Image 1 (tube, rainbow, N blue to C red):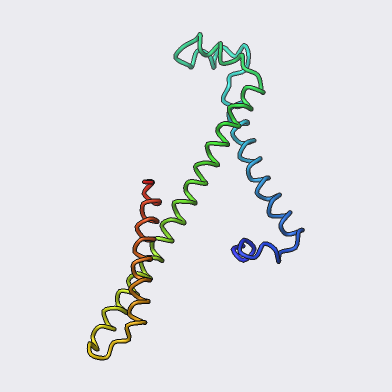
Image 2: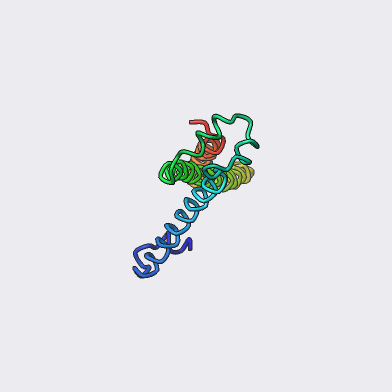
Length: 153
């Protein structure tokens, strides 16, 4: 699937439509699950046994009043919060992955600079400078990705 993300222009429109439909179906199923759970937990009108089981009878009686539309609005808000949580989790995972990869490249560049300096009289300053710049850029990117992962901006 990563191939499709990287090369979206080369993917047939039918496949793109299929993935979009699967994503929308997953969001709709999450919404319907929240809505069904909200409706199932609500005591039915006149169900006095369910009302007595709750601590506050007045709140239990008021809880029987909202309609399916009110439950749908609450389910929509829960779905939106869930999607934001998933999005945040994916962003944090990608930040951690980028921090790891940038840190690894920074380590490789640092080792290249250190091992390049071992042959002191005969140093290729162009290669040393290139690896030093790569090392600094990777160190900065590692720091930025790590801060994104930790939620600092």
